Image (tube, rainbow, N blue to C red):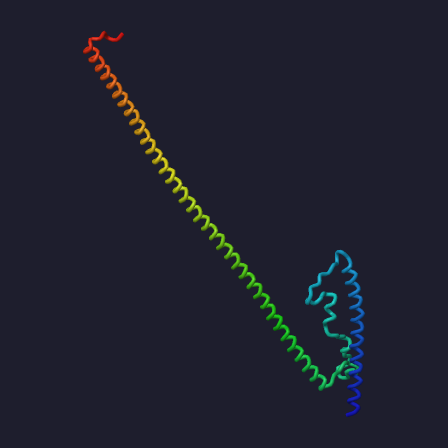
Length: 225
Protein backbone atom coordinates (compact mmCIF):
# COMPACT_ATOMS: atom_id res chain seq x y z
CA UNK A 1 0.00 0.00 0.00
CA UNK A 2 2.81 2.53 0.84
CA UNK A 3 4.56 1.61 -2.44
CA UNK A 4 1.40 2.42 -4.38
CA UNK A 5 1.19 5.80 -2.67
CA UNK A 6 4.83 6.51 -3.57
CA UNK A 7 4.23 5.59 -7.21
CA UNK A 8 1.18 7.86 -7.33
CA UNK A 9 3.19 10.68 -5.79
CA UNK A 10 5.99 10.19 -8.30
CA UNK A 11 3.50 10.16 -11.18
CA UNK A 12 1.88 13.31 -9.86
CA UNK A 13 5.26 15.03 -9.67
CA UNK A 14 6.02 13.97 -13.23
CA UNK A 15 2.65 15.24 -14.38
CA UNK A 16 3.31 18.54 -12.61
CA UNK A 17 6.69 18.87 -14.30
CA UNK A 18 5.11 18.15 -17.68
CA UNK A 19 2.44 20.78 -17.08
CA UNK A 20 5.07 23.29 -15.92
CA UNK A 21 7.08 22.60 -19.06
CA UNK A 22 4.04 23.22 -21.25
CA UNK A 23 3.17 26.37 -19.32
CA UNK A 24 6.75 27.59 -19.65
CA UNK A 25 6.56 27.11 -23.41
CA UNK A 26 3.23 28.89 -23.53
CA UNK A 27 4.56 31.83 -21.49
CA UNK A 28 7.52 32.20 -23.84
CA UNK A 29 5.20 32.09 -26.81
CA UNK A 30 2.86 34.56 -25.07
CA UNK A 31 5.72 37.01 -24.45
CA UNK A 32 6.75 36.73 -28.06
CA UNK A 33 3.17 37.26 -29.19
CA UNK A 34 2.71 40.24 -26.86
CA UNK A 35 5.96 41.75 -28.07
CA UNK A 36 4.83 41.30 -31.66
CA UNK A 37 1.39 42.75 -30.84
CA UNK A 38 3.01 45.75 -29.15
CA UNK A 39 5.16 46.33 -32.19
CA UNK A 40 2.09 46.17 -34.40
CA UNK A 41 0.15 48.48 -32.09
CA UNK A 42 2.85 51.13 -32.47
CA UNK A 43 2.47 51.24 -36.24
CA UNK A 44 -0.20 53.52 -37.76
CA UNK A 45 -1.75 50.59 -39.63
CA UNK A 46 -1.95 48.36 -36.53
CA UNK A 47 -3.58 50.59 -33.92
CA UNK A 48 -5.76 48.62 -31.52
CA UNK A 49 -9.10 49.67 -30.08
CA UNK A 50 -9.73 48.87 -26.43
CA UNK A 51 -13.10 48.98 -24.71
CA UNK A 52 -13.38 49.07 -20.92
CA UNK A 53 -14.76 45.82 -19.57
CA UNK A 54 -14.26 43.99 -22.89
CA UNK A 55 -11.82 41.06 -22.93
CA UNK A 56 -8.81 41.54 -25.21
CA UNK A 57 -9.21 38.25 -27.05
CA UNK A 58 -7.50 37.71 -30.40
CA UNK A 59 -6.45 34.63 -32.39
CA UNK A 60 -2.91 35.27 -31.17
CA UNK A 61 -3.73 35.12 -27.46
CA UNK A 62 -6.72 32.75 -27.42
CA UNK A 63 -4.41 29.83 -26.57
CA UNK A 64 -3.55 31.56 -23.28
CA UNK A 65 -7.14 30.99 -22.13
CA UNK A 66 -7.11 27.27 -22.99
CA UNK A 67 -5.97 24.71 -20.37
CA UNK A 68 -2.45 23.37 -20.85
CA UNK A 69 -2.41 20.11 -22.77
CA UNK A 70 0.49 18.24 -24.32
CA UNK A 71 -0.78 15.24 -26.33
CA UNK A 72 2.67 13.62 -26.43
CA UNK A 73 2.53 13.12 -22.67
CA UNK A 74 -0.28 10.64 -23.27
CA UNK A 75 1.40 8.57 -25.98
CA UNK A 76 0.91 4.83 -25.44
CA UNK A 77 3.36 2.52 -27.09
CA UNK A 78 2.24 -0.65 -25.34
CA UNK A 79 -1.42 -0.77 -24.28
CA UNK A 80 -0.70 -3.67 -21.92
CA UNK A 81 2.22 -1.93 -20.24
CA UNK A 82 1.41 1.75 -19.88
CA UNK A 83 4.20 4.06 -18.82
CA UNK A 84 4.18 5.26 -15.22
CA UNK A 85 5.39 8.66 -16.45
CA UNK A 86 1.99 9.44 -17.95
CA UNK A 87 0.10 12.15 -16.03
CA UNK A 88 -2.19 10.58 -13.45
CA UNK A 89 -4.48 11.56 -10.60
CA UNK A 90 -5.95 9.47 -7.83
CA UNK A 91 -9.64 8.68 -7.58
CA UNK A 92 -9.87 11.11 -4.69
CA UNK A 93 -8.21 13.85 -6.75
CA UNK A 94 -10.44 12.99 -9.69
CA UNK A 95 -13.59 13.32 -7.58
CA UNK A 96 -12.27 16.57 -6.11
CA UNK A 97 -11.43 17.94 -9.55
CA UNK A 98 -14.80 16.88 -10.91
CA UNK A 99 -16.55 18.72 -8.07
CA UNK A 100 -14.43 21.85 -8.56
CA UNK A 101 -15.01 21.91 -12.32
CA UNK A 102 -18.72 21.20 -11.88
CA UNK A 103 -19.12 24.03 -9.39
CA UNK A 104 -16.96 26.27 -11.58
CA UNK A 105 -19.21 25.47 -14.53
CA UNK A 106 -22.20 26.33 -12.33
CA UNK A 107 -20.54 29.66 -11.53
CA UNK A 108 -19.81 30.33 -15.20
CA UNK A 109 -23.37 29.36 -16.10
CA UNK A 110 -24.66 31.77 -13.44
CA UNK A 111 -22.40 34.51 -14.81
CA UNK A 112 -23.69 33.71 -18.30
CA UNK A 113 -27.28 34.01 -17.11
CA UNK A 114 -26.36 37.31 -15.47
CA UNK A 115 -24.84 38.46 -18.77
CA UNK A 116 -28.00 37.41 -20.63
CA UNK A 117 -30.06 39.33 -18.09
CA UNK A 118 -27.81 42.38 -18.47
CA UNK A 119 -28.14 42.07 -22.25
CA UNK A 120 -31.92 42.01 -21.94
CA UNK A 121 -31.70 44.96 -19.55
CA UNK A 122 -29.70 47.00 -22.05
CA UNK A 123 -32.05 45.97 -24.86
CA UNK A 124 -35.00 47.08 -22.73
CA UNK A 125 -33.24 50.36 -21.93
CA UNK A 126 -32.75 50.85 -25.66
CA UNK A 127 -36.41 50.07 -26.35
CA UNK A 128 -37.42 52.43 -23.55
CA UNK A 129 -35.25 55.16 -25.06
CA UNK A 130 -36.79 54.55 -28.49
CA UNK A 131 -40.29 54.61 -26.98
CA UNK A 132 -39.53 57.87 -25.18
CA UNK A 133 -38.06 59.26 -28.40
CA UNK A 134 -41.19 58.26 -30.30
CA UNK A 135 -43.30 59.89 -27.58
CA UNK A 136 -41.27 63.09 -27.87
CA UNK A 137 -41.71 63.00 -31.66
CA UNK A 138 -45.45 62.53 -31.17
CA UNK A 139 -45.59 65.38 -28.64
CA UNK A 140 -43.65 67.58 -31.06
CA UNK A 141 -46.07 66.73 -33.87
CA UNK A 142 -49.03 67.45 -31.57
CA UNK A 143 -47.59 70.85 -30.67
CA UNK A 144 -46.96 71.60 -34.34
CA UNK A 145 -50.58 70.71 -35.11
CA UNK A 146 -51.77 72.87 -32.20
CA UNK A 147 -49.65 75.68 -33.59
CA UNK A 148 -51.36 75.32 -36.95
CA UNK A 149 -54.75 75.37 -35.21
CA UNK A 150 -53.76 78.54 -33.32
CA UNK A 151 -52.63 80.15 -36.57
CA UNK A 152 -55.96 79.23 -38.16
CA UNK A 153 -57.94 80.68 -35.24
CA UNK A 154 -55.78 83.80 -35.36
CA UNK A 155 -56.49 84.16 -39.08
CA UNK A 156 -60.21 83.82 -38.34
CA UNK A 157 -60.01 86.58 -35.73
CA UNK A 158 -58.04 88.82 -38.07
CA UNK A 159 -60.61 88.18 -40.80
CA UNK A 160 -63.42 89.08 -38.39
CA UNK A 161 -61.57 92.27 -37.47
CA UNK A 162 -61.27 93.16 -41.15
CA UNK A 163 -65.01 92.59 -41.57
CA UNK A 164 -65.65 94.90 -38.60
CA UNK A 165 -63.39 97.52 -40.15
CA UNK A 166 -65.35 97.13 -43.39
CA UNK A 167 -68.65 97.58 -41.52
CA UNK A 168 -67.30 100.69 -39.79
CA UNK A 169 -66.03 102.09 -43.08
CA UNK A 170 -69.42 101.39 -44.67
CA UNK A 171 -71.21 103.13 -41.82
CA UNK A 172 -68.85 106.06 -42.11
CA UNK A 173 -69.60 106.26 -45.83
CA UNK A 174 -73.37 106.16 -45.16
CA UNK A 175 -73.06 108.84 -42.47
CA UNK A 176 -70.93 111.06 -44.69
CA UNK A 177 -73.44 110.64 -47.51
CA UNK A 178 -76.34 111.61 -45.25
CA UNK A 179 -74.42 114.60 -43.88
CA UNK A 180 -73.69 115.66 -47.42
CA UNK A 181 -77.36 115.38 -48.37
CA UNK A 182 -78.41 117.41 -45.34
CA UNK A 183 -75.73 119.96 -46.11
CA UNK A 184 -76.99 120.25 -49.67
CA UNK A 185 -80.55 120.68 -48.37
CA UNK A 186 -79.41 123.30 -45.88
CA UNK A 187 -77.57 125.17 -48.59
CA UNK A 188 -80.61 124.97 -50.85
CA UNK A 189 -82.72 126.37 -48.02
CA UNK A 190 -80.24 129.18 -47.53
CA UNK A 191 -80.48 129.98 -51.23
CA UNK A 192 -84.28 129.89 -51.09
CA UNK A 193 -84.34 132.12 -48.03
CA UNK A 194 -81.99 134.53 -49.70
CA UNK A 195 -84.26 134.58 -52.76
CA UNK A 196 -87.31 135.26 -50.58
CA UNK A 197 -85.54 138.01 -48.70
CA UNK A 198 -84.54 139.48 -52.01
CA UNK A 199 -88.10 139.39 -53.28
CA UNK A 200 -89.41 140.90 -50.02
CA UNK A 201 -86.87 143.65 -50.27
CA UNK A 202 -87.85 144.26 -53.88
CA UNK A 203 -91.54 144.37 -52.92
CA UNK A 204 -90.79 146.82 -50.14
CA UNK A 205 -88.84 148.94 -52.55
CA UNK A 206 -91.69 148.90 -55.04
CA UNK A 207 -94.23 149.81 -52.34
CA UNK A 208 -92.11 152.63 -51.06
CA UNK A 209 -91.68 153.88 -54.57
CA UNK A 210 -95.46 153.73 -55.11
CA UNK A 211 -96.11 155.52 -51.87
CA UNK A 212 -93.62 158.14 -52.81
CA UNK A 213 -95.30 158.66 -56.17
CA UNK A 214 -98.69 158.93 -54.53
CA UNK A 215 -97.38 161.41 -52.06
CA UNK A 216 -95.75 163.57 -54.65
CA UNK A 217 -98.88 163.44 -56.81
CA UNK A 218 -100.99 164.64 -53.93
CA UNK A 219 -98.74 167.58 -53.27
CA UNK A 220 -98.65 168.45 -56.96
CA UNK A 221 -95.00 168.63 -56.86
CA UNK A 222 -93.11 168.29 -60.01
CA UNK A 223 -91.78 164.80 -60.46
CA UNK A 224 -88.31 164.24 -59.32
CA UNK A 225 -85.68 164.56 -62.02
